[in-house]
Length: 467
Image 1: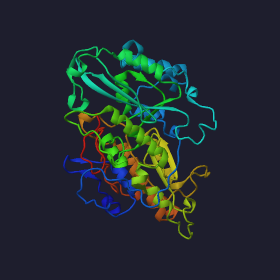
Image 2 (image 1 turned 180 degrees about the horizontal axis):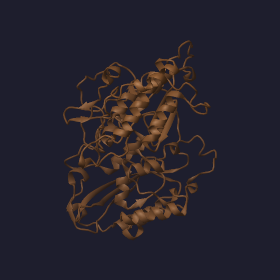
Image 3 (image 1 turned 90 degrees about the vertical axis):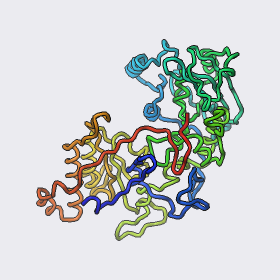
Image 4 (image 1 turned 120 degrees about the vertical axis):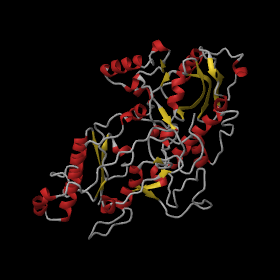
């Protein structure tokens, strides 16, 4: 019955038998139905951004794009102590880093910043209205090799500043014997490193001098570069996060794809043969951040390429009400319920956002969204016009053991959705009387889709992910 009430075809890739994010597909819609000029349905490679004719630039300072500590954790960054406010947090993080061999004893260093306030600048005529906000902005790109033990080790570091000028470009000699130079990707060969005497420790000491509290580090999947440098810093802008993958996380677009799509620039032409140019990659990262500052937060986001269903609903007037142009308050409302902070992703355009920590919270959140708060403190009485699909994630077995369903949690959610849908179509008394007669199989068992993290390509792209 569910397939007739809400038919859904999740996007996928027949070539590799992959299913893309169904949630992203259900909660967004293309800005325009027309095909891009000069593109065909089966065309390959990244298309130019399609924001339509209504796009308006929104000048935004670079500090607005600093990656939050939650996003840093989610993207496997080692957290700088300045992000930790309490002694307990610092001790816990120190124990974790020691366990993961990311401590000072393992050769790691933290930039010399005691707290986040050290990075603040007093407002003055020079910094006010400047997109760099008076900050020192450095883009880093590193090349690595594989050493004995299978670990990645630094072989080259390139740094460019906000003006795209090279600040550092050094070859580095690993302390452990190299077993694979990864030349097709890094461009590094045995001959190139033969006369190199610079060590990782030398680079670290130079970075401690170069990186100040007001410095922002920029890069593509910068966590990999910082791991190779064994360095932590609190102020990060990751272009892989700044420009979300068109199919949503945990996928990430490659730098090559982002460069072609947003800068109309071909890079990494030596991929698979002579390797990448780390200076070129670092400059692309700077240019992508500059473009984001000039265009605004929604440029290159899911909202620019596809329109949120919540935004589209807000333009639809409620029955009996004439909507004013661009007045979301007169339009229909929507709510998203999900684990964590749903307003950061698919629900950033939702009228109401309900974060949950357990599956029981999800069920309660659905009830709250559909019925509203009794006091009207957050969601008005009567609820919202649209409630997003909600995920139940507790007690999922390890992938190796296959997929099972949480019958108890799923049945509670199906019951809650069925009851609320039933009540919106009948008077409240009738709904209560018929509650027990609702068929338990009104909706089929939820299908759980697993997909791994991949730094793959974007839509219609054929290049490999970043190395």
